Length: 199
Image (cartoon, rainbow, N blue to C red; front, side, top):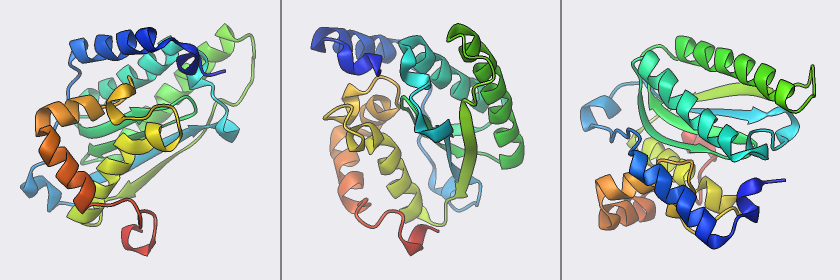
Protein backbone atom coordinates (compact mmCIF):
# COMPACT_ATOMS: atom_id res chain seq x y z
CA UNK A 1 0.00 0.00 0.00
CA UNK A 2 1.30 3.48 -0.82
CA UNK A 3 0.83 5.51 2.36
CA UNK A 4 1.06 8.84 0.55
CA UNK A 5 -1.98 8.05 -1.60
CA UNK A 6 -4.07 7.47 1.52
CA UNK A 7 -3.26 10.79 3.15
CA UNK A 8 -5.82 13.57 3.14
CA UNK A 9 -5.12 16.60 0.94
CA UNK A 10 -4.25 18.57 4.09
CA UNK A 11 -1.78 15.89 5.21
CA UNK A 12 -0.17 15.82 1.76
CA UNK A 13 0.25 19.59 1.79
CA UNK A 14 1.80 19.37 5.26
CA UNK A 15 4.34 16.78 4.08
CA UNK A 16 5.27 18.84 1.00
CA UNK A 17 5.58 22.03 3.05
CA UNK A 18 7.83 20.31 5.59
CA UNK A 19 10.15 19.33 2.71
CA UNK A 20 10.23 22.90 1.37
CA UNK A 21 11.02 24.34 4.78
CA UNK A 22 14.07 22.08 5.05
CA UNK A 23 15.46 23.59 1.82
CA UNK A 24 17.48 20.60 0.69
CA UNK A 25 20.34 21.51 -1.57
CA UNK A 26 19.71 21.84 -5.29
CA UNK A 27 22.26 22.82 -7.87
CA UNK A 28 21.45 24.15 -11.30
CA UNK A 29 23.93 23.19 -14.02
CA UNK A 30 26.38 25.58 -15.60
CA UNK A 31 26.92 25.58 -19.35
CA UNK A 32 30.60 24.86 -18.76
CA UNK A 33 29.73 21.74 -16.76
CA UNK A 34 27.34 20.56 -19.47
CA UNK A 35 30.21 20.43 -21.93
CA UNK A 36 31.77 17.58 -19.93
CA UNK A 37 30.76 13.93 -19.96
CA UNK A 38 30.30 13.69 -16.19
CA UNK A 39 26.52 14.08 -16.05
CA UNK A 40 24.52 10.93 -15.41
CA UNK A 41 20.96 9.87 -14.87
CA UNK A 42 21.08 7.16 -12.21
CA UNK A 43 18.08 4.94 -11.58
CA UNK A 44 17.49 2.12 -9.13
CA UNK A 45 14.35 0.04 -8.64
CA UNK A 46 13.03 -2.28 -6.00
CA UNK A 47 13.06 -5.95 -6.97
CA UNK A 48 10.08 -6.76 -9.21
CA UNK A 49 9.03 -3.11 -8.73
CA UNK A 50 7.52 -3.85 -5.34
CA UNK A 51 6.72 -0.70 -3.38
CA UNK A 52 9.14 -1.46 -0.55
CA UNK A 53 10.40 2.12 -0.24
CA UNK A 54 6.85 3.42 -0.14
CA UNK A 55 5.64 1.15 2.65
CA UNK A 56 6.44 3.97 5.08
CA UNK A 57 6.78 7.70 4.57
CA UNK A 58 9.91 7.61 6.72
CA UNK A 59 11.54 5.29 4.18
CA UNK A 60 10.84 7.73 1.36
CA UNK A 61 12.50 10.49 3.37
CA UNK A 62 15.41 8.25 4.39
CA UNK A 63 16.03 7.23 0.77
CA UNK A 64 16.06 10.87 -0.36
CA UNK A 65 18.36 11.92 2.48
CA UNK A 66 20.77 9.09 1.71
CA UNK A 67 20.93 10.01 -1.98
CA UNK A 68 21.85 13.58 -1.08
CA UNK A 69 24.29 12.45 1.62
CA UNK A 70 26.04 10.23 -0.93
CA UNK A 71 26.25 13.20 -3.31
CA UNK A 72 27.98 15.21 -0.57
CA UNK A 73 30.25 12.33 0.35
CA UNK A 74 31.21 11.73 -3.29
CA UNK A 75 31.58 15.47 -4.02
CA UNK A 76 28.89 15.16 -6.68
CA UNK A 77 26.26 17.75 -7.55
CA UNK A 78 22.61 16.64 -7.73
CA UNK A 79 20.70 18.51 -10.44
CA UNK A 80 17.38 16.70 -9.99
CA UNK A 81 16.03 13.77 -8.03
CA UNK A 82 12.82 11.95 -7.34
CA UNK A 83 12.08 9.11 -4.93
CA UNK A 84 8.98 7.02 -5.67
CA UNK A 85 7.54 4.06 -3.73
CA UNK A 86 9.37 1.49 -5.85
CA UNK A 87 12.27 3.30 -7.52
CA UNK A 88 14.28 6.51 -7.66
CA UNK A 89 16.02 8.72 -10.21
CA UNK A 90 18.85 11.17 -9.65
CA UNK A 91 20.46 13.40 -12.29
CA UNK A 92 23.94 14.12 -11.04
CA UNK A 93 27.27 15.66 -11.97
CA UNK A 94 29.81 13.05 -10.90
CA UNK A 95 33.47 12.65 -11.82
CA UNK A 96 33.67 9.02 -10.67
CA UNK A 97 30.43 7.23 -11.49
CA UNK A 98 31.78 3.84 -10.42
CA UNK A 99 32.52 5.12 -6.94
CA UNK A 100 29.16 6.87 -6.83
CA UNK A 101 27.27 3.69 -7.78
CA UNK A 102 29.35 1.69 -5.30
CA UNK A 103 28.20 4.05 -2.54
CA UNK A 104 24.61 3.60 -3.72
CA UNK A 105 25.14 -0.17 -3.55
CA UNK A 106 26.25 0.16 0.06
CA UNK A 107 23.11 2.17 0.82
CA UNK A 108 21.03 -0.52 -0.87
CA UNK A 109 22.65 -3.15 1.35
CA UNK A 110 22.05 -1.19 4.56
CA UNK A 111 18.48 -0.32 3.70
CA UNK A 112 17.69 -3.91 2.67
CA UNK A 113 18.92 -5.20 6.01
CA UNK A 114 16.99 -2.64 8.08
CA UNK A 115 13.77 -2.76 6.09
CA UNK A 116 13.71 -6.55 6.11
CA UNK A 117 14.12 -6.43 9.88
CA UNK A 118 11.27 -3.92 10.17
CA UNK A 119 8.99 -6.02 7.94
CA UNK A 120 10.04 -9.34 9.51
CA UNK A 121 11.01 -10.53 6.03
CA UNK A 122 14.53 -11.92 6.38
CA UNK A 123 16.32 -12.64 3.10
CA UNK A 124 13.90 -10.69 0.90
CA UNK A 125 15.55 -9.14 -2.15
CA UNK A 126 14.79 -5.42 -1.86
CA UNK A 127 16.74 -3.84 -4.74
CA UNK A 128 17.07 -5.03 -8.32
CA UNK A 129 19.91 -2.96 -9.73
CA UNK A 130 21.41 0.48 -10.22
CA UNK A 131 21.61 1.79 -13.78
CA UNK A 132 23.45 4.89 -15.00
CA UNK A 133 23.27 6.68 -18.33
CA UNK A 134 25.65 9.43 -19.38
CA UNK A 135 24.13 12.60 -20.79
CA UNK A 136 24.91 12.92 -24.49
CA UNK A 137 24.00 16.56 -25.02
CA UNK A 138 22.36 19.61 -23.48
CA UNK A 139 19.07 18.44 -24.97
CA UNK A 140 19.48 15.05 -23.32
CA UNK A 141 20.30 16.70 -19.99
CA UNK A 142 17.25 18.98 -19.88
CA UNK A 143 14.89 16.29 -21.16
CA UNK A 144 16.23 14.02 -18.42
CA UNK A 145 15.67 16.71 -15.81
CA UNK A 146 12.08 17.10 -17.04
CA UNK A 147 11.68 13.32 -16.96
CA UNK A 148 12.83 13.11 -13.33
CA UNK A 149 10.58 15.92 -12.14
CA UNK A 150 7.58 14.64 -14.12
CA UNK A 151 7.92 11.04 -12.86
CA UNK A 152 5.42 11.30 -9.97
CA UNK A 153 2.88 12.80 -12.40
CA UNK A 154 3.64 10.15 -15.02
CA UNK A 155 3.00 7.37 -12.50
CA UNK A 156 -0.21 8.99 -11.29
CA UNK A 157 0.78 9.88 -7.73
CA UNK A 158 0.12 13.61 -8.11
CA UNK A 159 -1.22 16.07 -10.66
CA UNK A 160 1.62 18.61 -10.42
CA UNK A 161 5.37 18.35 -9.93
CA UNK A 162 5.29 20.50 -6.82
CA UNK A 163 2.77 18.23 -5.10
CA UNK A 164 5.28 15.39 -4.68
CA UNK A 165 7.28 15.70 -1.47
CA UNK A 166 10.36 13.60 -2.33
CA UNK A 167 11.65 15.51 -5.33
CA UNK A 168 13.72 18.53 -6.24
CA UNK A 169 10.94 19.88 -8.48
CA UNK A 170 9.65 22.57 -6.12
CA UNK A 171 13.18 23.86 -5.50
CA UNK A 172 13.94 23.77 -9.21
CA UNK A 173 10.92 25.95 -9.97
CA UNK A 174 11.71 28.28 -7.08
CA UNK A 175 15.35 28.63 -8.14
CA UNK A 176 14.81 28.77 -11.90
CA UNK A 177 11.54 30.69 -11.91
CA UNK A 178 8.19 29.38 -13.12
CA UNK A 179 8.40 31.00 -16.58
CA UNK A 180 11.87 29.58 -17.27
CA UNK A 181 10.84 26.14 -15.93
CA UNK A 182 7.82 26.13 -18.27
CA UNK A 183 10.04 27.16 -21.19
CA UNK A 184 12.46 24.29 -20.42
CA UNK A 185 9.51 21.88 -20.21
CA UNK A 186 8.22 23.01 -23.62
CA UNK A 187 11.62 23.15 -25.32
CA UNK A 188 12.85 19.74 -24.11
CA UNK A 189 9.80 17.59 -24.65
CA UNK A 190 9.46 14.06 -23.30
CA UNK A 191 7.53 12.87 -26.35
CA UNK A 192 10.65 11.26 -27.83
CA UNK A 193 12.40 10.52 -24.55
CA UNK A 194 13.92 7.05 -24.63
CA UNK A 195 14.22 6.99 -28.40
CA UNK A 196 17.57 6.55 -30.13
CA UNK A 197 18.78 10.15 -29.62
CA UNK A 198 19.36 9.70 -25.87
CA UNK A 199 21.00 6.28 -25.99
